Image 1: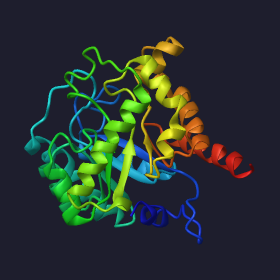
Image 2: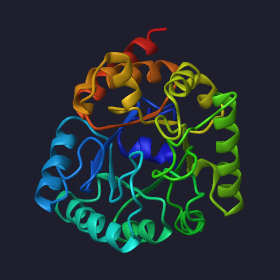
Image 3: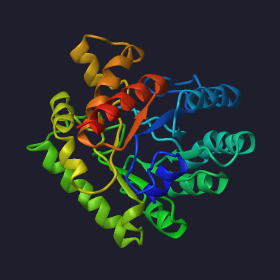
Length: 286
């Protein structure tokens, strides 16, 4: 089903081989997200951002109504629905059915309301552990689902996370999420995975995962990489303002393309579209 997404975006060749990687643009309709909280909480500003991202080459619009920054408080399903559904409906009414939309939530109730409003994909940062009903929903509707690795909740995830071998432990945890999804009835081809960069990870954990992206790709599942403006890169670059990490993010996008990553979740579409396309062109010349 993720191969169908490549075809819908025009990024799959006739022989079924995926073409250039997909760029997922972040649209946080929240007041408190770590980088852009409050900027797109109004319907007009949200739609302007959607149109900007489309003009810059985005493939998927990822809409979230709950901040998942470290320390964030949970948001009730009803509040998330109130935030995301009007935006999804407006995209469908104003821009038609060609725009791919993912719903960024851990709650089955929110995911159902979003799919009913016109969303195509479920993006679950809890990997199906936050609310098992989200797996049942994906199985019943056939919606593709992205399962991310994390520990705890956004409120607690950075409270002294620890790994002996972060790459293997993330792979093992993702395998458990995949098994639960398959047991719930989700088809294998409808599953993608995400290592959860910045989620319950220390700086070195993030670097170790980025250095071994090939092991995630080797699972055979499509992989989503989300490094956009993450704090660990700021510690490397001596930068505290997330919006100043656009170039750093684009570097990880290029590295990800070379490692075989198929999807990238980013705030800055234009810069990462360019990075992905150039890296892809170089990779094809091998």
